[in-house]
Picture: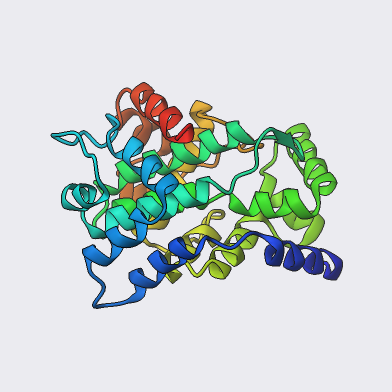
Length: 280
């Protein structure tokens, strides 16, 4: 990596706001073998804004729960400990996205892309043995967060890379590698490590490109969901270049990118639910 770029990005990662103490405690509970649902509920209940956002999402048609959920405790009952924890982390991360436009991005459109990727990744997880749906959801939410770091530290350079990728019809990450020796996936993984997310989630964020990706269910679901959202133009993360599924991912998901899209049926409800989540 270009040394000056490395220094800029390291400083930008250090300047990224830390999660609130409550969210940090949720991460700690995720790593503690003896943590309980009661502890999780207590921590989330202490953050009224996060609680309201979570209840709005949980009560959406997206989750199709059999009754109205009016407390975090009930959310744990119906969703489970891990799903509730991951949803809380995802909603906290969404709250850190910029607003408006900068560095060539419409951040609301970028948020819609991230939420749609998360939503489809969660849906794909149902067909991939060993893939946890809510882990796929959170990884989908965070997959482009490296672009936020770049937008904060080097907005002019990032905008130049975006314009080059669009003009040449090439993948943004290849343009970044050529210009700087790194890409937003690597930077996003460093940010996820700083936020102390679990190692498998960090690795999913890091491994978004190429044909020799680690063969895991979560990486397969997030990679495919990202390409689906780009192809169907569900939001925009700045570069519309669509990659075909590598052979290992195609095998896990049962076909090519177009075949996977066809197997998912009508995705318009997914887009509508993603808009709801993005506005939470």
